[in-house]
Image (cartoon, rainbow, N blue to C red; front, side, top):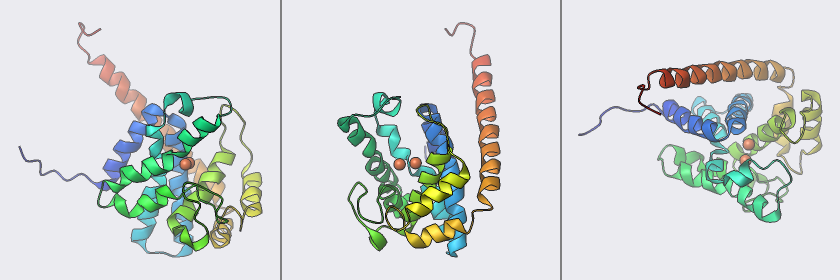
Length: 225
Ligand SMILES: [Fe+2]
Ligand SMILES: [Fe+2]
């Protein structure tokens, strides 16, 4: 049988990140917020609509490689050993390899691969620096850190947006690209509302997924145990 149904790219991304949600709900929600913030920076920079969409998709998928990180590392509450840390770090390369497989996503695989690189070259996986880091990766790096600081995790509570902006500014020129930091800072007043609206979308989507799974359970035959 030949399938002639075309799958929209956004449907495909949705499918992939929903798979990630089943594995790691924090990363799913985090990727959603990073996608919205990255898109806003890309618009602020003034790139083409097409590239804005690419950055949005790349940001959604930036941590998709965590699918390949073992549970004992992904779910560990305490401090990671050096070996576990290396396993965790492998997510950027695993994610880039996943994206490479698709002709459209191939273009953004570099943004995924380099999203933990630093402006001063002290990041991973390759230690590239400055303008050698693709712009998409430099944008995602800032939004990734901002969201990590403002999110509550099992091992620490969140900090305010104000403190997170201070931290991003402090690391401009060392961890982050100064020009992208300036663009992000120009969005400062709009970011809290942006996060509020994306968190509402996430909660709505979580409710729908819960309903779907309850419905799936209700149609199981009586004999199914
Ligand atoms: Fe990451
Ligand atoms: Fe991330």
